[in-house]
Length: 149
Image (cartoon, rainbow, N blue to C red; front, side):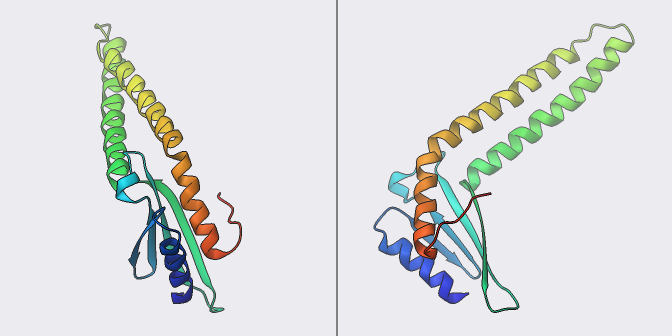
C-alpha cells in the first residue's frame, strides 16, 4: 500500500505544478494548485486499502471542493424541504377550495431545483479540462489506463 501511495505522490510531484497531493493515512487527494483553481475546480479523492492477497485496492471519486459539495447539499435540502411542505400545503388548500397559493411556492422550488441542476452541469463542463488533467496524472502514476465508471 505504501509503495502505491509513494508512486502516486512521486508522479504528482514530478509532473511539475499541474497537480498537488494531500496525503493522509490510507487516503490521498489529487487537486489543482491554488494558483490555477476556480470555484468549480475538481479533486480526486483516493482510498488505498490492502486486500488479503497483499495487493492494494485503489478507489477514487472525482468531485468539486468540499465547499461546493456542502453548498449544493444544503441548497437541495432547503429547496426540497420547502418544495415538499409547500406542495402538501398547496394541495390541501386546493382540496378544501381555498386559494392554492402554496402551489406557487411549490412551482418556484421546482424551478430552483432545476436551476441548481443546470448550474451543476455548467460547473462540470467548466471543470472538465482540469478533471482530465488530474485523471492523466493518476494514470501516469499507476502506469496504465484506468476506466472511470
